[in-house]
Image 1 (tube, one colour):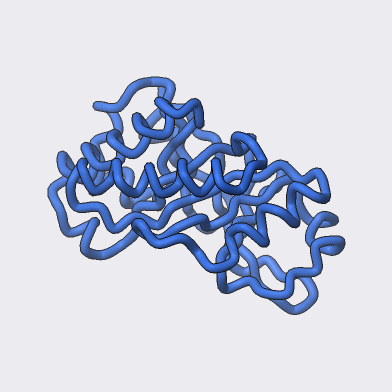
Image 2 (cartoon, rainbow, N blue to C red; image 1 turned 180 degrees about the horizontal axis):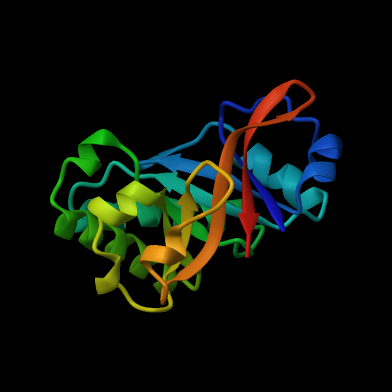
Length: 191
């Protein structure tokens, strides 16, 4: 299954054309505790066309308490939209430099707090990060076996399972240059 992730950078999407190139979309719903400007429009467009969708939060959390607040922002936004639970889940996007400068135990605790809060609200949640972040900035072997992972690693093959064979790889972002009508998108293989 091919999935495209979108954010406020993708404006004026030709949804009929996009649907020809993917079977799902993941929408940036928030950055920290601030909602993305176009999240509602993107989710509504996907839902109207029967495209399975998910959401992600670009985290700025440096404490578990802040990660819980970011998760509450996502939960409240999902409830306000009224489209139900995202079929493709909710993801904490770990790539902010300040977050990555923290000790791995702290980053892992923040991710765990976010995931637990979403799971507590009945929404499956997982982690989006690059393979190098999984290997050096997180201790994912400390997280529960049910936690799903979405790995960014551009190239012909995802090596996540080489390093974490027992973990649940849900998605692989293999390019940030997939072009539809002259516009670039991140494209993912979804399992």
